[in-house]
Image (cartoon, rainbow, N blue to C red; front, side, top):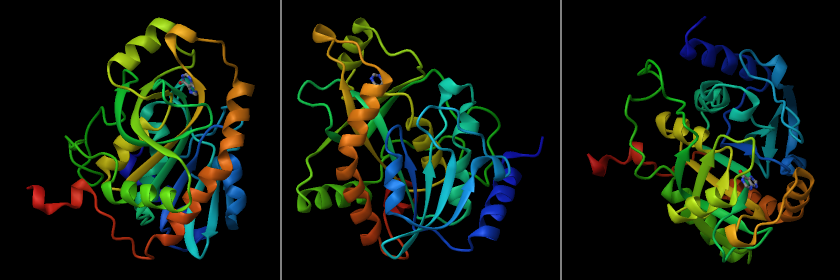
Length: 289
Ligand code: HPA
């Protein structure tokens, strides 16, 4: 099989052929959050199965296409539907699009997901800006030979979530009067939801929300030196002493209800990003070395 680097280049070349722009940002729309794509003036829509080397989306409520267009007047890419570990992909496959966004010159990656609330102060439908994460997926997308053209062997994770993007999102949320918690996301492989004992454990180790995605993409974004921000919609509460069953339809319904706020926040963020984004990232922060 061709090397990851070459596959990324081929995929990026295909997208560039159909949409010859440099995206200010790439946005990944999580479970139940796809209608954010309606805010985008689409110029080209590429189904994943037509993009060389892209995996296909099998998760319910995930469409499986890359929307290329503008939000406000900013060129952006949006993934309508993401890939999950529980679908049977490797973490390298799941995070392949992140590599492609970097190759296309994106200046920022914005991730959204549906997550269960562990912090008892949260409520269903709340938004949480992810400040840090705990990877309990039992796997890592960087396992295997490291290609220095893509990133370094041991990427620093001390500031995985870009500080400038986070500050900007907090400020915009305040301006828009959108309540935005900050917190730690823990990622598990899924697809089974967690037991009460597991939720108790996850809260004890310092997590505010639990999900089955996002963390692999963040690890690869850091590896690729692509500044990343991520927001969770709290779709259900995972309180071990007051646990009630949840179903996918419930999760989708809450995600859809919360979506207008998320849409506003992301649209504001993208339209305030400088055309040539100069956000900070730990990798480009030379003061550390
Ligand atoms: N666990 C529990 N609840 C959830 C999750 C999860 O991974 N994702 C969305 N709600």
